[in-house]
Image (cartoon, rainbow, N blue to C red; front, side, top):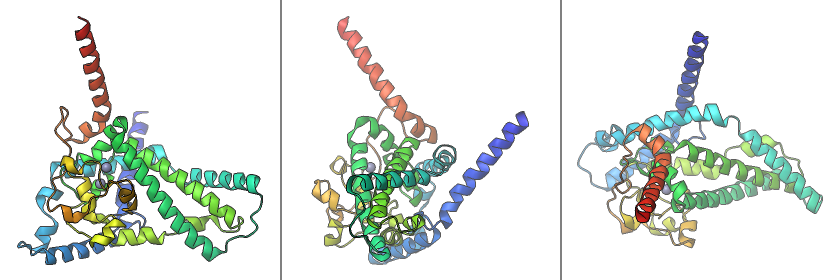
Amino acid sequence: MNIDWIKEAYYLIEATISLSLSYFINTEKRIHILYLITSMILAYYVYKSSNIKTSFLKYLFPKKVWMSQSAFVDYSLFCFNSLIKIVMIGPYIIVGFYIAFYTNELLLEIFGFPNYSLGVTQTIILYTITLTIIGDFLSYIVHLLMHRIPFLWEFHKIHHSATSLNPITQYRIHPIELIINNIRSIIIFGLVTGFFDYLSSHSIDKLLFLGVNVFHFAFLLFGANLRHSHVKLRYPKYLEFIFISPFQHQIHHSSNPRHFNKNMGSKLAIWDYLFGTLVLSASTSKVNFGIPKENLNYNSFLSNLINPFLNPINKMSKYLRSIIKEKK
Ligand SMILES: [Zn+2]
Ligand SMILES: [Zn+2]
C-alpha cells in the first residue's frame, strides 16, 4: 500500500517535471526556445541603443533578476501550476469542442442552414481574426475584473507581488487564476469555433481550428518574453496605441500608485485606450516592480499560495473585532 503511494507520487513528480520542461519545446508556449532566442535578439537591440557599459551577457542575466527570491517563487509556482494542470485541468479542449457543437446546433435551430457558407480560406482568415480580437477583449475584461474586484485581486496579486521580472514570471499566477483563465479560453474557443463551424456549414475539419494562430505566433516571435523582464523594449508611440509593448506591461507591474490598474491589455492596447487605462512608455523611464507593503509578506512560494485565503479572513476578523469593540 505504502509502496503504491510512493510510486504514484514519483510518477506525478516525473509528469510535472516533464510538462514544465516541455514548455521550452512547445511552439504554442511563450518560453519555447525559438521565442527566447528572438527575444534575446530584440534585447540586443535595446542593449546597443541604450549605451549600456556592462557586457551583453551581464546585461541579460543579472543575478539580482534571475537568482532573486522573487524569481525562485516564479520558478516554483511555474512547476506547481504544471502539477495543477495534470491533476485538475486535463484535456479541457474537449469541453471547448462540446461548447462549439452546441453553439452550432443552437444557431442551426434559430436561423436554419445559412444561405451562404464560407470557404476554407475565408473561414481560416476570419476565424483567426475574430478569435484574436474577441479573445484579447475578454482577456482585458477578466484582467480588469481581477484588479477591480477585491476578492479576485487577492489571487491576481500573486502575479504582481514579483519584485523582479523574468520570462517565467508569466506563469507566476495563483492556481485559482490559472483555472479562471482556462475557463475563459475554453468558452471563447468554443463559442467562436461553433459560430464559424456554422458559417462554414459544418464542412471544415475541427482540427483545423486548433492550427497555429498567425497573430499569436507573431506576438510570441516579437519579444513577448520581454514583457516580463528588465529589458525596456518600447514601440514607436503610434504603435503603443494599438499593441502593448513589453515596457508598457512592465509599467503594469510598477509599484508606483500612478501606474496601478493601467495597461491591462494582453496583445492589443486599444482596449486600454478605449477604457482610459492606457499609459505610453515614453511617460516613464524607470519602474520598480511589486505591490505596496502589507501586513502579510509575499516572499515565499507558500505565502503566495495561502495569502489570498488568509487576507480576507484577517480582514473579516479585524472587522468583527471592531464591531465587538464598538458594542462594548
Ligand atoms: Zn495585472
Ligand atoms: Zn505580467
